[in-house]
Image (cartoon, rainbow, N blue to C red; front, side, top):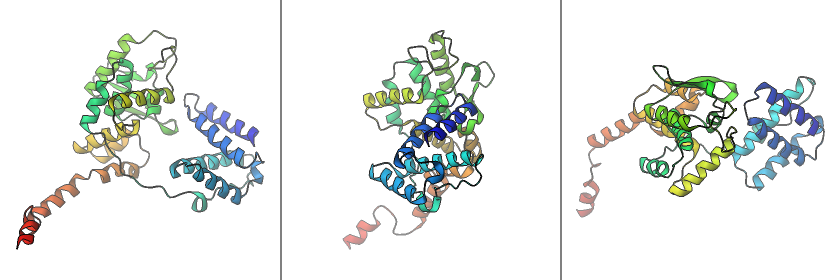
Length: 296
């Protein structure tokens, strides 16, 4: 199976040379190959996938991680079926995929943001995290930014983000994001790399490197903050400003409106307004009603 995995990963890299997701594919498939003892793809059974899922769960992997690996295996078999249409994928979604806990997005509180950015004294790092907070960029989109993606001199400054599935979208820059990016670029080294964000060796920063910088700062600031929570805060702020959900969908780069609706569920201002309006109308819902009732 390892030979087929290598072919598949090389195909992924040829399709999108800039993306780094091929590393995740490779890791996931090597785990699977080890679990089935490197048997030929056509020899893997449904039962072996059962055992793989059980083993992953026993090792403490979350359902979302296991489901992602099952999706990788499915993509692998779809690739192989181009040459062998009779090949059957051993992953059965109803049987193997695990139920994931649906948690509402949690934006970062203003006090946490203040502490986080207060400990960042590096212009590069500040620009990276401001782009996540004020433009909703994913950490992978920050890592994949190129100088040729920046349009900072336009009337409304913007950049081109390379999202999931190699889809590009225009991202507009707030005054904060524009200033942070300009400040960093003014001191950026003149390296041969076209990557916007460079390591101290002059190479493009990987998602792992950016994540490590985030971990360092959140430890210094003592805040529970992730790159995705910065993105949640971006969406939440736009909702509070009454931006239409379809516009937020485009700014976030969501393929499906249902994905963006999760943010609406987390901060539905109309539901809040209706609830508190009802509280004012309903007798016995006042602050002192229960206390008064207990006193009698």
